[in-house]
Image 1 (tube, rainbow, N blue to C red):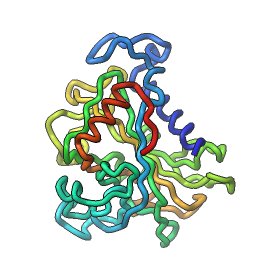
Image 2 (cartoon, helix red, strand yellow):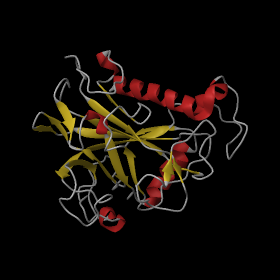
Image 3 (cartoon, rainbow, N blue to C red):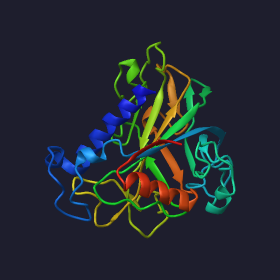
Image 4 (tube, rainbow, N blue to C red):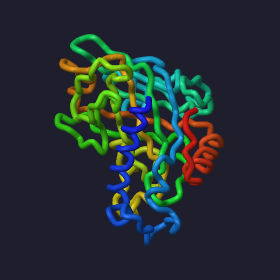
Amino acid sequence: MRGLVLLVAGALTLALATTVGPVALAGDKPKSGDERPDIRVRDLRGVNFVENCGFSHQAPDDPIVFPGRPGASHQHTFVGNGTTNAFSSFGSLRSGSTTCMRRDDTAAYWVPALYQGTSQVLPLAATIYYRRGTFAEVSPFPNNLRVIAGDAAATAPQGMRVTFWSCGLVSGIGPSESVPTCPATRGSFLRLHIRFPECWDGRRLDSADHKSHMAYATRAGCPSTHPVEVPQITQIYRYPTRGGEGFSLASGGVYSAHADFMNAWKPEALRKLVDDCLNALVHCGRG
């Protein structure tokens, strides 16, 4: 687990470098936008709260892309809310159970099913990092926000800022665009990482492509078209396999990695975590 934390910390440093630029990384304070002028990049490192969510179920359902159409999607594996299906809504999810450690997190998280040959490999669980991605103050997700990160149609690497595979740093193997072969050492198992955008347009809970209402931050922070900073989510799925050859995702090859999120947190609980952790520049750890 320490290796996973170090790997995530390294990925966060890369993301912050992309977001705030080399001048800020050298120690200068931000000079524009809705930022607090006393925050430096080093203040953002390790600022997060973390969810641990066990595997819940699998189904060929997707309530974002194919709402109300059970069986219309490729196979997905779900963590978090135990009731997620083609008919899921904010209300139904809030009434459902959760596999996450924080019982107030009834959000739905899912990824395409992983196969080795024709055999499905179910995830053991997922670790979900909620971070502060820019200098701007963070707002909680609105109820029923729906987001997809990554490209289900990708046939080439999407870039490791969005998604990558790993074995954890204890393996001595770095992040990889394709499925690596993990060594037979303790804690070295296959993981899939998907990073979500942190900028919302402030109006839409979804969009036609399920992405346009969101945007990734740039060096200047969130773009003017998407001015609301929300928690930056990274979903990390852990599989009981060492990886290697013959793997594919239900959406296509190993480059088609993507993940979905439907916000159904208890609103007051999410607001408290955002304020007490992300906006207070505190590492709150795991639920």
